[in-house]
Structure formats: structure tokens, C-alpha cells
Amino acid sequence: MSDSERSGQFYWCTRHHRVETDADVCPAKHVLGPYNSAADAENALQRVQERNEAWEAEDARWSGEDR
Image (cartoon, rainbow, N blue to C red):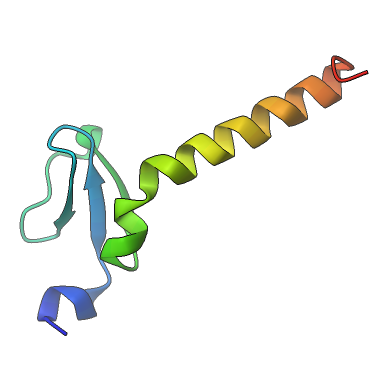
């Protein structure tokens, strides 16, 4: 395991579409994270999509649209 993998700071860069670490991270407006692993950072967009879908479903349920 490399030093960067031990540090636990991984980010998904929406500008470069890659995992970045503290050593090479882009400005905050371009990244999601930090994550504890490179794999978690790599799956960041999928997790965002899943959360958005869950929140939209909850909003629909709350407003009675799911009846």
C-alpha cells in the first residue's frame, strides 16, 4: 500500500474524470470527496445518482405524487 492509500484522502475530479489525492487534487469546485479509498472515489458519481434518485422518490412520497 502506498503512502497516499494510507492517508485516506481520495477525491473524484469531475473536470478530469479521475481519482485524485491530496498531492494532486484540483480546486474544491471540481471534486467530490474526500473518500477513504480510491474505489470509493471512483464510484462517487454512481453514489450521487443513487442518492438523488432516493431523495426524488422521498420528495414524491412526501408530496403525495406516489399514490
